[in-house]
Length: 353
Image (cartoon, rainbow, N blue to C red; front, top):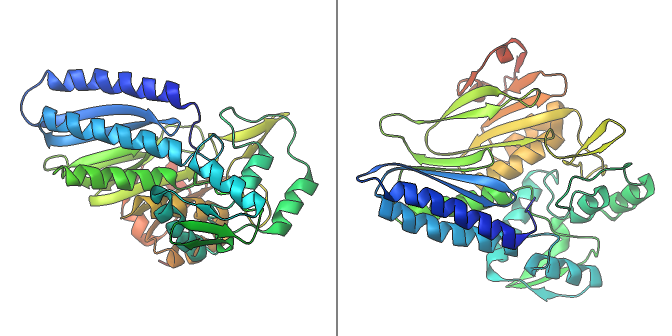
């Protein structure tokens, strides 16, 4: 989810950016430049290879400004354009959509259809019921079953959202848009596009462990680690080829806790309940937004349905870890990952995809 307190975030991002830029500018020649921003409630690390420091400075300054605009415009529960849209939907009114949100809504509609509704950005009302539209981790007992059942009966969906140019209407007042399930992927895609427009061809943009990389690091490909969802540490290493995204959705970091029970933040739109049978899904894809959305949808799909949903969403590489520690992979993914430690001892290899 997008973090809410924009002014402290802007200040944190500015000072982090300034400190790194001063370090970068003290060197000469083309080299590896590393920058660290704080936005979307997470650290965003940008690494540039064979870029002059002054070029990197301009690119990252512009990128930071773009990220801060996204943070404001896409926020689902603090004053801003998306909150205004959701209030209009709840009143049954049409509303104008700012230009930057139009393609996000359009892509969300496509991805929801391809996922059979398992990726559902109209789920904001359910997230609010569970307490996940908040800057602080929710606590206390889970919400009343009646409230969850009422939301499920209303069945909010992106199919209820209609765009005519930049005018949005909805035939379901229970729709509340929340793009947290793929905002990082969409933002990373925009960041890569921005860097390329600046002539930068070798870079990696890592938003809290979800990333997209282009080019290479000299003669070597970018090599990234995938966190183990049970106990931390690195579960697998992946070499990223030329232009690929690696995204992981997991239920081990954000959750509601009550009397020692964890209620993960990834919710099944069909039941209104948290997903507990799957702890993480990692996908490799050529598009960050699609990878981000697919990772969420595949967690909801679980071990029985992930093959079908991955195929419908055009995802070739998938690694799923269930709550018992079993790792499910298709053959294409098995060729790409280098499992670390004892992770390879509990693998189920699918013959599909």
